[in-house]
Length: 517
Image (cartoon, rainbow, N blue to C red; front, side, top):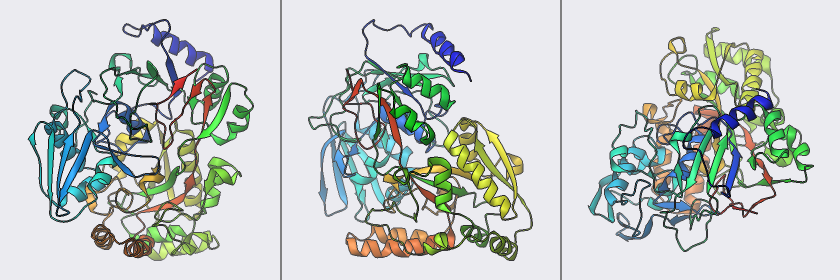
């Protein structure tokens, strides 16, 4: 799409009914990483959906910049005997429709979240009771000790009870939360624009904002997400001052840095972990020997250079099951990823494992430049290994819908997809969706590994850090046996930010606390 076309479309959306704004309104304009195709954060793990949801919904606990859980919607909690938790909601909390936030809203939201989230599943499996004895009290009676604040800070967002009662296999499309921003549904233009307004009824905490915790005070009137898939068009919009915030691709960073109106900031020090995810339910990747064989073909450095260039400050290889540098990470078994790459050997190993030329459907999101680049590189690697690759190109929204399908590729399913895991979510087994291996209850890809599940349970059952680290070493050993996915490296994401934007939060692309000069 040409820049003139994009700007003309944006101008047209501003003329729609309900888009009028005060002449002096403070508007933060963000170029979104992708179109907001899915609104429901329970239904998908897509980053763009969860960035949206963090604006609209609030959580009982949040993470500070050190990834320590802090009370958010709750004023505090008491614990009896390590297993009986009583949480007390802060007074005055309200949804965007003016209704009070009640404990039963939270209970229904937790149950819906726990039906799909890996951390939530672990909680619900040991819960004898999750109830709301009164309007502000949430009670959890558990069979054994569990890191409740950490689980609820992860992605357990609170919505009204009648929305939360929606079956988690169906999408919630009406966005009424109690977070610091209201979703302006009547201003949404699919493929072009999403808008949010400050929620004046939000009750901030006294503590300063820190990542997803603290006051979350909003100092702008509106946040507008602009969908501009073409990087050159997006770059021009940033340099012209028509947008304020963009996760720019590496090849444009030097150009953006030269602009006197822009600066570059890395707001999330843990970045993302790029992965190739298998569909474990369908041939050929239902065969673990075939998955293992492909480890010998992947060079993490090659994948990282393809998407981030030679600047090593933007990426890291030597990535295993856990976020590099975190307490649970190790280099155990990494030699399978760091030894010489031998495509002929991999080809022979695939044949020995039983691969007979079956078609492999690899989904390619054309409107996600970085994901598409990695996908094309992966297709080339697979072909050099002798695999019959069917590279199917589609938009990101279609990919997300299709990724949820468990059936054969010939019936609209898939075999392999590239995506990113948040570095903050892969530091240990607790919220690590890529490691969960409980079949159809797992994240898309649906691996089954009783041993990974046993080790994960053992990690939860001990509070001793040394013992937890030893268990994570065993998990990584098993990871190379089961290969739930192939790690491709760790990416750090600098944002191009207009100099008029001040007080940018750390920990992610959050817009509370941001001020405009």
